[in-house]
Image 1: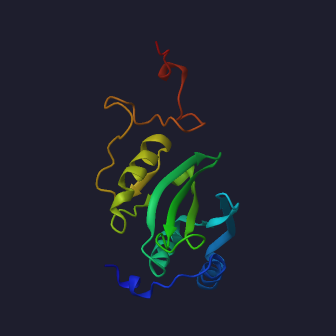
Image 2 (image 1 turned 90 degrees about the vertical axis):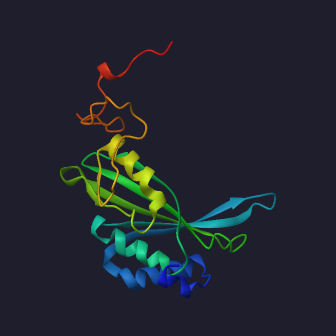
Amino acid sequence: MHKAMLNVVAKSPEEFKSSLEKKFDDKIHNVEVRGRVAGKQDEVSFYDVWISCRKDDLEELVEFLFSFDFPIFHVMSGDDIGNAVLLNYHFSLFSGAGRGKRIGVVLSVEVPKEDLVMPSLYDKIPGIEYSEREMHEMLGVSFNGLPNQSLVFLPENWDEKVHPWRRDDSGLSPKHIRELS
């Protein structure tokens, strides 16, 4: 059990946001709470809190999530946004808290293309391995501390200098695309 899990207290999304802003002040920006409406009653079934941070602050923010609840990691999504690669780490808190109390947390990090290296969260959250490996092969982001960075989706003989989700020179060229029959 993680030491901070002793502090599990269900909080509202606004209380969570306020705690986050108080602790991290200038380390985060663009904190946004979004209600997700669903069901017959068309009422909020859960909230998402989107947080943008610098890559150097990611590990500290994830540690902060542990002070509320064990963060359930879902998936990492990524995008080539020009001079950087945007990584979105998707988590849930209070997963058993009931309707309207679950909080989704998305930590967004822009990783500059001239330094495509991130700290791995594998030691804290082993289930993140395949998402980090996917971002490595598809977008070219390396993760320090990830023990296995081998390919997940692409063939073994794939040129690892080619990253299919990139929109620059390291993305796909016509020679990598073939007709399917």
